[in-house]
Image (tube, rainbow, N blue to C red; front, side, top):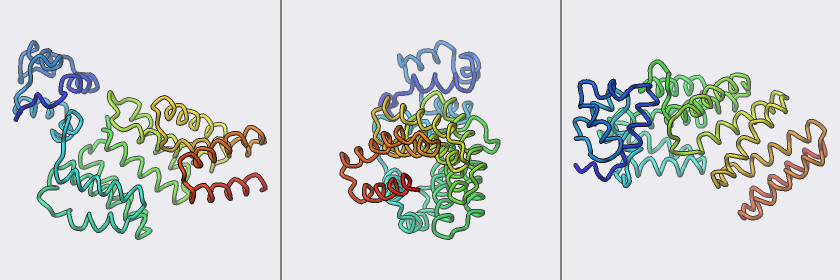
Length: 294
């Protein structure tokens, strides 16, 4: 297997530093310090056996390491994951559940990280399809424990699962518990050396802004709204952008700054018109009208 196809150097160094390991500590019993320096600078490439030992010492799944470092990773489990992600965007939890039932005993999903992915989405389905939030919480907690029993130094995937727990607390109107979980998730993701998908951080920030609004803590909500808005702008992402504009406008209306609120609400509608999201635009127009006339 040619490891030259993978961008190991920077990733290896970042995770070594994230785990607070010196060059000597990571190299110990695996290779020389000089060889490790060469690997991190990509002057040389480790064998698969050496890479496995690094992953084990870093307490990482080897497959997770490859997923981060890979330039081109296309295989059946990835195709299944992409399909589940598509259905998740469409909120088609019946389709997601059908896929999980078809794949959960497949030998292709025997690896811990893939089992975790299916367990994560099974927990989501328990909430959305069965209305069983207790079973959902239990399944999601077990999914995190599968790769991180002590729930420390969470990976990006584990943080996403934690965020799902926060979202279920929000859905079930347990807003204070939602805030607690979202704050844990935010702290964890801000401590990561690399973030592959900024959407995860945006989901956390938006979840916090919504939960604080529900608790009538509008200033706190605005703080996280602006963090999310700035992240969208800096990363050039449309994801949740109109939602942050709406949430900011909503908060300003609630604290009596109606004109300022109207500005942000109009920005939300303007974005929806640009994106040609006609159905959502009509819903938001009604929502804003109710807000301003309440």
